Length: 321
Image (cartoon, rainbow, N blue to C red; front, side):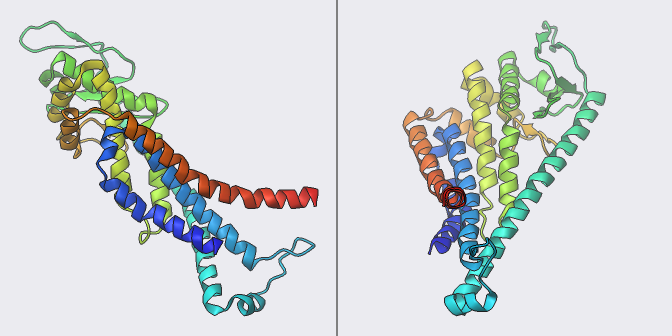
């Protein structure tokens, strides 16, 4: 029953629960807490899958006095029956597959993302300008563009994005500098630097790896999009604290159609409408944030304890029996 329970929890946390959470509107008013809840759900799904595997292994591979498995295929079939034994074997195989895919996904996502960013960083360093001020049209004085790692591309379309990493870059276009006002430029740069300072790219990498680890028929396709939106909301909040909502909203609309490379975190994009509406709506809610933190702790405690207890019991048996 424990193996079945853990399997059901893992399936719920990897499919229906993320789907319902992605459709909810309250995360818009508590983005940081919602991301913590998303992380707890993803981690709890992985832990539940591993807990199911350990529970099944304890039934299929019963250790004897010498520590070696005493169960055989025929004996376990006789005890469990064909249907339950087949279900155990399938779930155990699924657990092993999830573990292998998770390791492979973490490695693949990390290597591919860093390779793309390194290549694009080299390109913007070659073709982009690096200067401390940006000229204004119509004879106005130049505007300061403080901050290391800033690159300006000679592109007419307004765009702004960042390339996270050890040698991070914030990239803006001449079109953005010529279109946006001073406070709007400040808002967009603050937005991108908030991504770099908080390392939002690592959060996205974790969700990408976990999403790829679970089979397509059990995982929710909307989880990654929801987390991407929440990360943009966190950067928006940092910009609002610096310049207020109106300059940021204007800058987001101006940069909404800007094309950015894969692996970058852009100011614009398909979520611009939702984010601009949020800037004119109700502020963040401490009550919603507190409830989300409590839910995150509750979601994570059960599978974590369930995974730790068998190991602690076995260590106690080995050392104190």
